[in-house]
Amino acid sequence: MDSIFFNAYNTCDIQTQTDMLSNDIEFFYDKGGVSTSKSDIVASTKKNICGKVTRTLIKGSIEVYPIHQYGAVEIGYHKFFNNQEPDAKSIPSKFITIWKKEHNKWLMTKVISLH
Image (cartoon, one colour):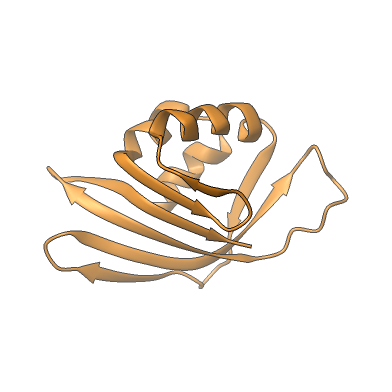
């Protein structure tokens, strides 16, 4: 699910990203605070990410643990490259994603992004 979501992220496939976010999404960003609005997260992605930022997963860093009768938690490291800041150093950062399996569909319910 991580690769599906971030392939959509890297290619500006907003519909796939939107479909994978829970209506009850909680996005915790250590540098930017908390967002609980799916529409705000999607709008911010369109404005600030699309065509500018790409994400690379640090190979071998993902850990996934099932959560009984809910879904799973994913922990890993990734880094981002902003083509608007070509000289900026891309430093690996930790992320935690809580996935909920609802009606045979996986949805992101909580995302914690730490830099």
